[in-house]
Length: 267
Image 1: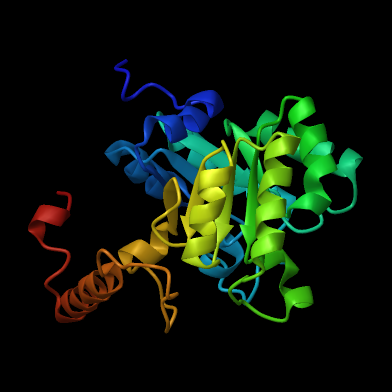
Image 2: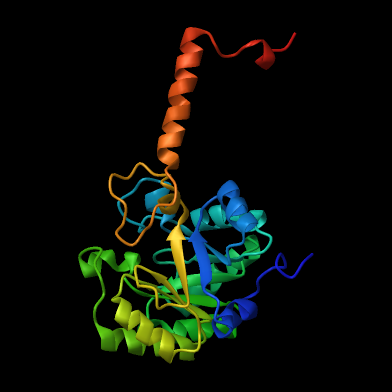
Protein backbone atom coordinates (compact mmCIF):
# COMPACT_ATOMS: atom_id res chain seq x y z
CA UNK A 1 0.00 0.00 0.00
CA UNK A 2 1.39 3.42 -0.98
CA UNK A 3 1.70 6.31 1.44
CA UNK A 4 -1.05 8.14 -0.47
CA UNK A 5 -3.49 5.22 -0.16
CA UNK A 6 -2.67 4.39 3.46
CA UNK A 7 -5.50 5.09 5.91
CA UNK A 8 -5.59 8.67 7.17
CA UNK A 9 -5.63 8.46 10.96
CA UNK A 10 -6.75 11.18 13.37
CA UNK A 11 -3.15 12.24 14.20
CA UNK A 12 -2.29 12.40 10.49
CA UNK A 13 -5.43 14.42 9.80
CA UNK A 14 -4.59 16.90 12.54
CA UNK A 15 -1.02 17.20 11.22
CA UNK A 16 -2.32 18.32 7.82
CA UNK A 17 -2.72 21.82 9.29
CA UNK A 18 1.02 22.09 9.80
CA UNK A 19 1.68 20.85 6.27
CA UNK A 20 -0.07 23.85 4.76
CA UNK A 21 -2.02 21.75 2.26
CA UNK A 22 -5.74 22.43 2.19
CA UNK A 23 -7.86 19.60 3.60
CA UNK A 24 -10.73 18.27 1.47
CA UNK A 25 -13.82 16.61 2.95
CA UNK A 26 -17.22 15.56 1.65
CA UNK A 27 -20.40 14.49 3.38
CA UNK A 28 -21.61 11.14 2.03
CA UNK A 29 -24.18 8.59 3.14
CA UNK A 30 -23.75 5.30 1.24
CA UNK A 31 -21.25 2.78 -0.13
CA UNK A 32 -20.96 3.89 -3.79
CA UNK A 33 -20.71 7.59 -2.95
CA UNK A 34 -18.03 6.98 -0.33
CA UNK A 35 -16.11 4.61 -2.58
CA UNK A 36 -15.96 7.17 -5.39
CA UNK A 37 -14.94 9.99 -3.04
CA UNK A 38 -12.26 7.82 -1.48
CA UNK A 39 -10.99 6.66 -4.88
CA UNK A 40 -10.18 10.20 -6.01
CA UNK A 41 -8.42 11.07 -2.76
CA UNK A 42 -10.57 13.15 -0.42
CA UNK A 43 -9.06 13.43 3.04
CA UNK A 44 -12.20 12.91 5.06
CA UNK A 45 -15.78 11.70 4.72
CA UNK A 46 -18.44 12.85 7.14
CA UNK A 47 -21.50 10.68 7.57
CA UNK A 48 -23.78 13.56 8.44
CA UNK A 49 -27.14 13.57 10.13
CA UNK A 50 -28.00 15.82 7.17
CA UNK A 51 -29.05 12.48 5.66
CA UNK A 52 -32.41 13.31 7.20
CA UNK A 53 -32.77 16.13 4.69
CA UNK A 54 -30.64 14.95 1.76
CA UNK A 55 -31.61 11.26 1.71
CA UNK A 56 -34.89 11.10 3.64
CA UNK A 57 -36.34 14.35 2.30
CA UNK A 58 -37.22 15.86 5.66
CA UNK A 59 -37.14 19.53 6.63
CA UNK A 60 -34.61 19.16 9.48
CA UNK A 61 -32.08 16.70 10.91
CA UNK A 62 -33.88 16.31 14.24
CA UNK A 63 -35.64 12.99 13.58
CA UNK A 64 -32.50 11.08 12.56
CA UNK A 65 -31.81 8.21 14.95
CA UNK A 66 -28.60 6.65 16.22
CA UNK A 67 -29.59 3.39 14.55
CA UNK A 68 -29.87 5.16 11.19
CA UNK A 69 -26.47 6.80 11.68
CA UNK A 70 -24.86 3.43 12.43
CA UNK A 71 -26.53 1.91 9.35
CA UNK A 72 -25.18 4.58 7.00
CA UNK A 73 -21.79 4.84 8.70
CA UNK A 74 -21.14 1.13 8.36
CA UNK A 75 -21.65 1.35 4.59
CA UNK A 76 -19.49 4.42 4.19
CA UNK A 77 -16.64 3.14 6.34
CA UNK A 78 -16.65 -0.24 4.61
CA UNK A 79 -16.22 1.53 1.26
CA UNK A 80 -13.30 3.66 2.43
CA UNK A 81 -9.62 2.76 2.21
CA UNK A 82 -7.88 6.11 2.73
CA UNK A 83 -10.18 8.88 3.96
CA UNK A 84 -10.85 9.54 7.64
CA UNK A 85 -14.48 8.64 8.35
CA UNK A 86 -16.33 10.77 10.91
CA UNK A 87 -19.92 10.16 12.04
CA UNK A 88 -22.42 12.66 13.39
CA UNK A 89 -23.88 12.04 16.81
CA UNK A 90 -27.58 12.70 16.12
CA UNK A 91 -29.91 14.92 18.14
CA UNK A 92 -30.40 13.78 21.75
CA UNK A 93 -27.74 11.08 21.52
CA UNK A 94 -25.31 13.25 23.54
CA UNK A 95 -27.22 16.26 24.88
CA UNK A 96 -28.63 14.07 27.67
CA UNK A 97 -25.29 13.69 29.44
CA UNK A 98 -21.82 12.20 29.41
CA UNK A 99 -22.99 8.64 30.11
CA UNK A 100 -25.32 8.59 27.09
CA UNK A 101 -22.73 10.27 24.90
CA UNK A 102 -20.05 7.72 25.77
CA UNK A 103 -22.44 4.84 25.19
CA UNK A 104 -23.71 6.13 21.85
CA UNK A 105 -20.38 7.31 20.48
CA UNK A 106 -18.84 4.02 21.56
CA UNK A 107 -21.55 2.13 19.73
CA UNK A 108 -20.70 3.98 16.53
CA UNK A 109 -17.03 3.05 16.74
CA UNK A 110 -17.79 -0.55 17.77
CA UNK A 111 -20.37 -1.24 15.05
CA UNK A 112 -18.70 0.58 12.15
CA UNK A 113 -15.16 1.11 10.93
CA UNK A 114 -15.40 4.86 11.49
CA UNK A 115 -12.55 6.61 13.28
CA UNK A 116 -14.29 9.55 14.97
CA UNK A 117 -17.57 11.23 15.87
CA UNK A 118 -18.82 14.80 15.42
CA UNK A 119 -20.99 16.86 17.72
CA UNK A 120 -22.35 20.39 17.72
CA UNK A 121 -21.51 22.99 20.34
CA UNK A 122 -18.71 25.00 21.89
CA UNK A 123 -17.98 25.86 25.52
CA UNK A 124 -21.15 24.15 26.74
CA UNK A 125 -19.89 20.85 25.30
CA UNK A 126 -16.29 21.12 26.50
CA UNK A 127 -16.77 18.72 29.42
CA UNK A 128 -18.42 16.20 27.12
CA UNK A 129 -15.68 16.47 24.49
CA UNK A 130 -13.07 15.93 27.20
CA UNK A 131 -14.90 12.84 28.46
CA UNK A 132 -15.15 11.34 24.97
CA UNK A 133 -11.54 11.99 24.06
CA UNK A 134 -10.50 10.72 27.46
CA UNK A 135 -12.24 7.46 26.64
CA UNK A 136 -10.33 7.18 23.36
CA UNK A 137 -13.12 8.49 21.12
CA UNK A 138 -11.82 11.22 18.77
CA UNK A 139 -14.15 14.21 18.38
CA UNK A 140 -14.65 16.64 15.51
CA UNK A 141 -16.34 19.77 16.88
CA UNK A 142 -18.91 21.88 15.01
CA UNK A 143 -19.44 25.62 15.48
CA UNK A 144 -21.46 28.32 13.75
CA UNK A 145 -24.75 27.28 12.21
CA UNK A 146 -25.92 24.30 14.24
CA UNK A 147 -28.72 22.35 12.54
CA UNK A 148 -29.61 20.42 15.71
CA UNK A 149 -30.34 23.74 17.45
CA UNK A 150 -32.66 24.93 14.70
CA UNK A 151 -35.66 25.22 17.03
CA UNK A 152 -33.75 27.44 19.43
CA UNK A 153 -32.10 29.63 16.76
CA UNK A 154 -35.31 30.05 14.76
CA UNK A 155 -33.85 29.20 11.38
CA UNK A 156 -30.79 28.52 9.26
CA UNK A 157 -28.76 31.71 9.46
CA UNK A 158 -25.18 32.97 9.57
CA UNK A 159 -23.66 33.04 13.08
CA UNK A 160 -21.96 36.45 13.46
CA UNK A 161 -20.99 36.61 17.16
CA UNK A 162 -17.20 36.89 16.78
CA UNK A 163 -16.35 36.79 20.48
CA UNK A 164 -18.53 33.75 21.10
CA UNK A 165 -17.11 31.88 18.10
CA UNK A 166 -13.50 32.59 19.13
CA UNK A 167 -14.15 31.49 22.71
CA UNK A 168 -15.95 28.35 21.55
CA UNK A 169 -13.14 27.41 19.15
CA UNK A 170 -10.53 27.75 21.87
CA UNK A 171 -12.73 25.78 24.29
CA UNK A 172 -13.22 22.78 22.00
CA UNK A 173 -9.51 22.70 21.23
CA UNK A 174 -8.68 22.78 24.92
CA UNK A 175 -11.19 20.00 25.55
CA UNK A 176 -9.42 17.73 23.05
CA UNK A 177 -11.24 18.05 19.70
CA UNK A 178 -8.86 17.13 16.87
CA UNK A 179 -10.50 19.54 14.38
CA UNK A 180 -13.49 21.86 14.11
CA UNK A 181 -16.08 22.51 11.42
CA UNK A 182 -17.04 26.16 10.97
CA UNK A 183 -20.43 26.43 9.28
CA UNK A 184 -21.91 29.65 7.89
CA UNK A 185 -19.84 32.23 9.72
CA UNK A 186 -18.20 35.41 8.35
CA UNK A 187 -15.05 34.63 6.36
CA UNK A 188 -13.00 37.12 8.39
CA UNK A 189 -13.95 35.42 11.67
CA UNK A 190 -13.20 31.96 10.28
CA UNK A 191 -9.78 33.15 9.16
CA UNK A 192 -9.11 34.63 12.60
CA UNK A 193 -10.12 31.38 14.32
CA UNK A 194 -7.88 29.41 11.94
CA UNK A 195 -4.92 31.57 12.92
CA UNK A 196 -5.59 31.20 16.64
CA UNK A 197 -6.15 27.46 17.06
CA UNK A 198 -3.69 24.64 16.48
CA UNK A 199 -6.32 22.19 15.20
CA UNK A 200 -7.58 22.16 11.60
CA UNK A 201 -10.60 24.28 10.74
CA UNK A 202 -12.93 22.87 8.08
CA UNK A 203 -15.19 25.43 6.48
CA UNK A 204 -18.62 25.20 4.95
CA UNK A 205 -19.87 28.65 4.11
CA UNK A 206 -16.95 30.11 6.09
CA UNK A 207 -14.72 31.47 3.34
CA UNK A 208 -11.31 30.48 1.96
CA UNK A 209 -9.27 31.16 5.10
CA UNK A 210 -10.01 27.80 6.75
CA UNK A 211 -7.55 24.91 6.72
CA UNK A 212 -9.98 22.89 4.60
CA UNK A 213 -13.44 22.69 3.10
CA UNK A 214 -16.39 20.30 3.19
CA UNK A 215 -19.37 20.01 0.86
CA UNK A 216 -22.30 17.62 0.70
CA UNK A 217 -21.79 15.00 -2.03
CA UNK A 218 -25.24 15.65 -3.51
CA UNK A 219 -24.79 19.43 -3.57
CA UNK A 220 -21.46 19.47 -5.37
CA UNK A 221 -22.69 16.96 -7.98
CA UNK A 222 -26.14 18.43 -8.56
CA UNK A 223 -27.63 15.13 -7.42
CA UNK A 224 -30.69 16.52 -5.70
CA UNK A 225 -34.31 17.43 -6.23
CA UNK A 226 -34.05 20.44 -3.92
CA UNK A 227 -35.28 23.58 -5.73
CA UNK A 228 -32.53 25.76 -4.27
CA UNK A 229 -28.84 25.09 -3.80
CA UNK A 230 -27.27 26.51 -0.61
CA UNK A 231 -25.31 29.74 -1.18
CA UNK A 232 -22.12 28.15 0.14
CA UNK A 233 -22.28 25.12 -2.18
CA UNK A 234 -20.61 25.11 -5.58
CA UNK A 235 -22.06 22.66 -8.11
CA UNK A 236 -19.36 20.89 -10.13
CA UNK A 237 -21.70 18.68 -12.21
CA UNK A 238 -25.41 18.31 -12.96
CA UNK A 239 -26.11 14.66 -12.30
CA UNK A 240 -29.77 15.42 -11.75
CA UNK A 241 -30.24 16.33 -15.41
CA UNK A 242 -28.12 13.38 -16.59
CA UNK A 243 -30.18 10.97 -14.50
CA UNK A 244 -33.49 12.41 -15.69
CA UNK A 245 -32.43 12.14 -19.32
CA UNK A 246 -31.30 8.53 -18.87
CA UNK A 247 -34.61 7.62 -17.22
CA UNK A 248 -36.59 9.32 -20.01
CA UNK A 249 -34.68 7.26 -22.60
CA UNK A 250 -35.33 4.09 -20.59
CA UNK A 251 -39.07 4.84 -20.43
CA UNK A 252 -39.17 5.54 -24.16
CA UNK A 253 -37.25 2.39 -25.12
CA UNK A 254 -39.40 0.14 -22.95
CA UNK A 255 -42.61 1.67 -24.25
CA UNK A 256 -41.51 1.44 -27.90
CA UNK A 257 -40.09 -2.07 -27.57
CA UNK A 258 -36.45 -1.09 -28.18
CA UNK A 259 -35.43 -2.49 -24.79
CA UNK A 260 -34.67 -5.22 -24.06
CA UNK A 261 -33.01 -6.19 -27.33
CA UNK A 262 -31.49 -9.51 -28.30
CA UNK A 263 -28.20 -8.56 -26.62
CA UNK A 264 -30.02 -8.16 -23.30
CA UNK A 265 -31.94 -11.42 -23.53
CA UNK A 266 -31.12 -15.09 -22.89
CA UNK A 267 -31.73 -17.98 -25.29
